[in-house]
Image (cartoon, rainbow, N blue to C red):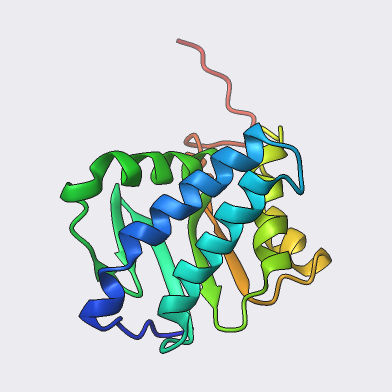
Length: 168
């Protein structure tokens, strides 16, 4: 498993801007047609804000853990931008994602594909491995979509499968 390397304080301070740009990019992609100036502008801004952190870091890993946000393994204080963070977490939950990791070398095409997919999909539930397959099929080598893993717990009834007849 990969080990998260904590960001320097100056890079960590850029995370709220990155999350905000991501949210605006998803919203604009929903509202405007592909190729419109509004989409192109925010996508460039989002990539620039990501690149400002990725220039000195191989990965920017944003994960939710129990309504908290961890960035490269560091829990961050979101009290100053709670509304943005809450909306970000809602998006992750809507798409059954526990996190997104962006890697050095990220391209505009990868960002555009991710945003188009998040903004335009009407899928309500995502089968296990959906995001891994999506990334593989679309050659997303610099974006990792970490899908929530649900474990099904089945409580076996005492004597299940033994044909016990309850006479009471």
